[in-house]
Length: 356
Image 1 (cartoon, rainbow, N blue to C red):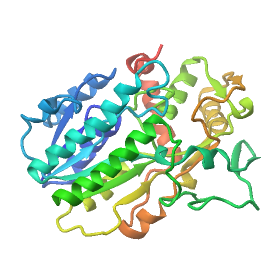
Image 2: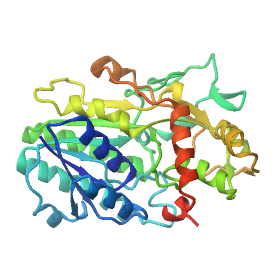
Image 3: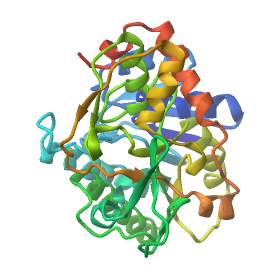
Image 4: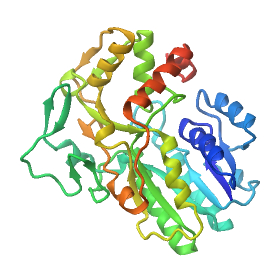
């Protein structure tokens, strides 16, 4: 089986390529990447040493697909993954849409040509901002939790957000671009008869993730704490009680192997995958973890809430368990320890990631 991973030189793409290659003898992995992100050249070197065939190309350019050989499957791990993309002044709204939506169109046209299956790694940010921001939370210990005795919107519980939670705007330009990509992917698959799966991913984290506060918060926080770089709790009282869950991208492999298996015929095409409540942590709790490992470090309080920030976002992956038997395998503590060890071994990681 031939599999093309777009964005293969990013953290998620390279992690998938390395693990999948080592766990399956009947797969040949190819990669496409524009090498535009700081640190991607490092991953290209390691992937080439493993014998993975890499193509230098940009998913936004239809002509870059013309020289690619036929594939059986395409895993789309190429995206601008920041919820602030298009509004933070570092990328334009047009660049975001070209990358996250028009790039998907080019991939789908390629899949149509060769009748290749398509798996989109989508995002938890396709879910509606207004009802998420309106959920009542309370402080318990050093983290927010959903307050009991309230009427919750459909699709959310203390276990997390389910697939039936609202996806109505406002979402964010980033979330909307991924949601539109989901719709197009489903339509292309139905119209041109090739398989499509949509995996809505929560926060992914692990060693080797490029540490940026808007894209790799766990790697950024641990690396910055170790180096005593300035850190800030932004919004929600400035205490760092906002909560996210995380999981390691290598834990996706078992799901991807099933989805790409011959004759996979599940009818549910859209799934949440994430760390769930057991892998959820607040920034304040992450700071406590860092203090235990590296010593104390002061974190500045900023009271202003940024656009698109929400106090609690956890993914309920129970549907993926029911249908595919999937659940994350790497514990939160194992992920944090892995990142910390990598940070200790790579003192210039934040600079390599383009920070500072």
